[in-house]
Length: 398
Image (cartoon, rainbow, N blue to C red; front, side, top):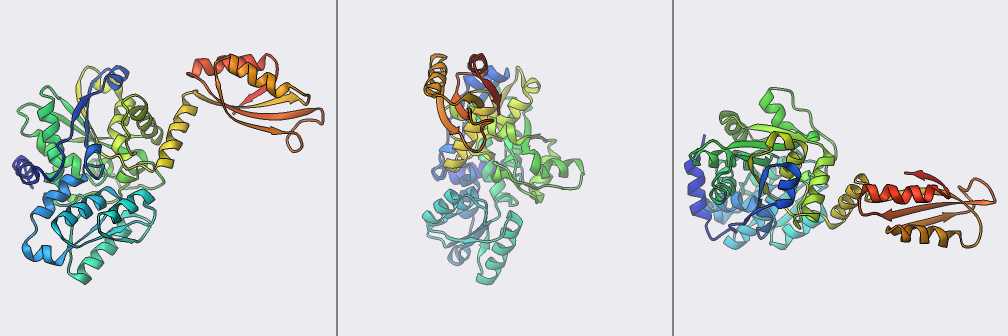
């Protein structure tokens, strides 16, 4: 099992090849959770994610013969881009196998770095099997995204930088897919000279590492916005490291992940993908556990599809009561739509969408049905607008 020194060696090896990203204090998240929260913005790596650290370290250790043969990798996106970029910088052939369900933005960006992209299978496991088969057929070196000592050590350099930037840090909340980043951060923490608790974070539907650590059977599956950590088969090396160093794993709901994405975008002005926001999601979910503590959170990936980001922001606004959808039964007479629009506008809300039905859903020929969606300042303001409408019309809130 590798130790702290491997992480320090990796930091020296990849210096100048990756970005030493900033660590920023988040006033908004700190006030919300009661913890002193520091965000490590590895979203600012060239490919938008921390995976460059492990890829750069692993590729730097290739022999001349291995470089000549080329490399193969499997990934849902961020490891793919990282291997593609650093292989390209070294002039090494890279074949990247990605699940067929990988978001289009990640496929496109991987190909832009010059890699040969192969879409295969509907899961990481299927992609991994195909990548290994291609590596064996073509004599390529397989670069595992997390179950590799050099990759783990490279990812751990994020933890080294975070600890150096926040001298009184006493906890880290680290997203877990295969476990490479969390294991690397656990190794980095060994050199801090003081106890630093490392907590992995998984989404409920893919809590494989938590299940492995507890000895429970692994049962995962389903769709998630955090596809970057939707891993069934965690790494054996990361598992051993986390187990040896007593790191725990917290799990969070899909709603919490979405809330964290929205909070980072609206309050911290940071774009994060679902996997990258998992640490913040854990803070939101278990704020009492970390209240009064100094917590470092890697925001470790920014590669979210634009449409997915827009949908998340709107879904969170609906849950928060800032976006309200109503059905009104109204009299079918001239001017009534203007009256409703004026009432909503005078109340300070903004109409987003209107659908007016006379024939199919109206309760009678003398009436019409109106669907309205409006944006309010907050839940209290939205309820005020709804009550103003109810004073004159029959209103159902959807």
